Picture 1 (spheres, rainbow, N blue to C red):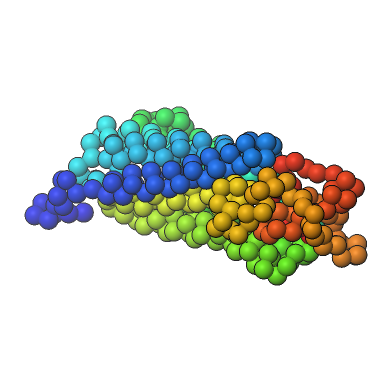
Picture 2: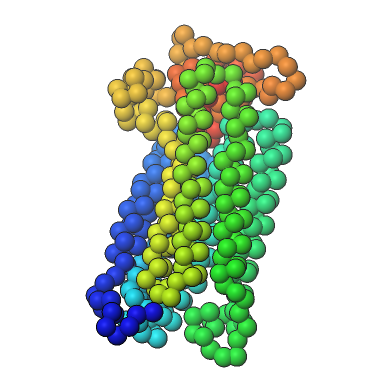
Amino acid sequence: MYSNAALPPATETRGHQTITIVIIFTILALIAVALRGITRFWILKSHGWDDIFIGIAMIGSIATGICQCQQVRYGSGKHVQYVTEFETMMSLKYLFFSIHFYNTGLCATKAGILLLYRRIFTYRSMNILSTAAMVLVACYWITVIVSGILMCIPVDAFWTGIEPKKCVDQFKLYFANAGINIGTDFMVLLLPITYIWRLQVSQRQKITLAVVMSLGTFTCLMSILRLYGLIVLSKSKDPTWEQPATAYWSSIELNMGIICASLPTLKPFITKVAPRILGTERASRMGYSGHSSNSRFVKPKHNHMQARPNSFTMLHLGRDTQSQESASVYGRDPVAENYAFKR
C-alpha cells in the first residue's frame, strides 16, 4: 500500500466531496418534487399514482443522503490506514442501509416515469409495454432488496464481520445489480420514442417533448459512471479513499432521475408563475383552464392505430387545447389533462 516513508497525510480526505454533492443534488430534487406537489395539489388540485411513487423516491433519496453523510463521519473518504475498526464497522452499517434506500428510490422513480407514460400515451400497446416494464422493475426491486439483505448470513455480519458467517462476493452482486439497473434505465428511456412521433402536434412540440424525455440520458450516464466507480473500488487497496466516488455518483443518479421525472409536470406552475418568460400571459389570465374563444383542435388521423383524443395530451408543450366539444364527448382525467400535448 504505502511505505512508512510515503504515508499520505492523516488529514487528507475526500469526504467533503460526498457531503457537498449529496446536499446539492438532494436539495435540487427536493425543490423539483416540491414544485410538482404545488402544481398537482394547489394549481391542478389533483394528483396521481406517479406523484406518489416520486414522493417515495424522494424519501429514499433523503434517507440515502443521510446514510452517505454518516459514512463520511465514520471514515469514508479517508485513507484506510487512518480508519479505526469501529469506524469501519459503522461505515459498513450505514452502507448496508443506504443500498436499500438507494435501490428503492431508483425503482420508485422508474415506476413513476412509467405511470407518467401511461397518462401521456393512451395507445393500448403503450399500456401493455409500460405495464410489463413496471412488472420487470418490481421484480428487479424485490431481487436487489432480498439479495442485499441476505448478502451475509447472519445479516449483521456484513458490518460486524463476526464469525462464523457466509457471505456472497459483494462486488459481483453489485456489478450484476448495476448492469440490470443500467438496462432498465435505457428501457425506460427508449420506451416512448416511437410514440412521441405519433402525436398529432407540431414538429416543434414533438422536438420539445423529445428533448424533455431525453434528459433521462443523463441519468443513464450517471449509472455507467457509478458502475465504473464500483470497478475502481473493487480493485483498490485503499477502499475508504475510493468510496466517495460511488457514493456521489449514486446520489447524482438518483436525484437527477427524480428531477427528470418531475420536469414534465411543471408546465402549469411555470405558466402561472412566469407567463412573461414563456409568452403565455393569456393562458395564465385564463387560470390555465385550457379554454378560450379561439381554441384550436387538431383532429386525430383516421386510422385504427390512432387512440382517441386524450385531455392528458393538451397543454404542456403549447397553447393549443382541446375544445369544449371534444372534452364533453371524451371526458377528462383531472390529473392528466394539464400535462403535455394534444394529439
